[in-house]
Amino acid sequence: MVNLLKVHGSQNHFFILDQTELDNSLTDKELRAFTKKITNPKTGILNGADGVLVINKSVRKNSLAQMRVINEDGSEASMCGNGLRTVARYLSEKYQKDHFLIDTMNASLRVHKEENFAKGVPAYSVEISPVRFNKEALPFTNLGHNRLIDTFVPEIYPGLRFTSIAVPNPHLINFVNQEQIAGPILGNIGKRLNDNNPYFTDGVNVNFAQILDKNKLFVRTYERGVGFTNACGTGMSATSLALLLTHPDMVDINSKIDVFNPGGMVQTKVHYDDSTYWIELTGNATITHHIIISKSDLRNNNFANVQISETKEQQAYEQFIDNLPKFNSITTLA
Image 1: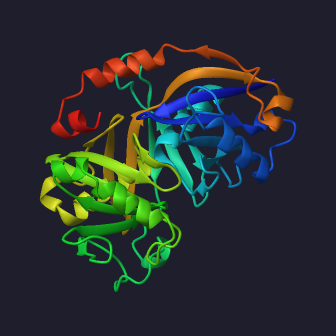
Image 2: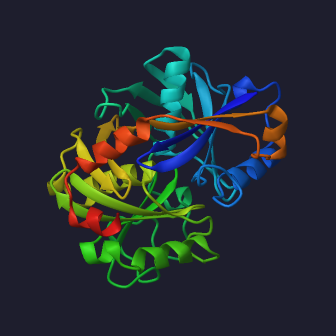
């Protein structure tokens, strides 16, 4: 039998599959098929998810394990901040460690256990890096610039300034007002730049952010391979860095930034060490369900016989959300 978990970070939902517990790991083809079926609300379980977080043995020295991120459409993301927190919790509890490294596609990232956000709401901090600004890292082309930092880009949308940052997932960020963040512009831009287009040929995560106060943001994301999501950890991290670069009077470096999103709230810190930016992302790591499935059913994508048990952590998380400040953006998009 195989144990799966249903988890979320800021209600960015995933299934966790620990392949180190399998006799033989799934092939990439099997992982894509498994992910597409289990995350689809019509063919999967528990109303689907945004993707599957796959745990493998470490591939770099001194790391505890490797995390791969398979999106619901079968594509693979280089990183996922919200997902990394939940994997950090799983590995922390499995190996009884509070500080360690997890391999991702491009780097081994530091993670550590934090004090609970609230009663029954475990929290973890994860490193978001490497950070790059050059157009090849996103990539983008045909926009007349080598990088975008608070830049008018009429090819994308008139009158809006965009910042592009790879962390390493590619992000396009714009600071807007409440009407714009709640309106149709984000969805239109996100869909266009993630279909066939001459600008972001591999697609891009698009983030609209509203500055609420100093060190306070609201971020809404159209995620590559997913669409609108409750939250995007790398998106909130990239947006925090963009805030420092474009509105330095509204943020203090190395200080906590409260980042609200349709799924809740996280905290970020932007660091600049040895001429390098990196972001610390802190937020919930919630386990909602334990799932047991046979090895044969796992390989055949048969979910008819799974055994599911629910935790009480979602109730605790919802109580935490209920106690958050109510900003207009949150009320509009909830």
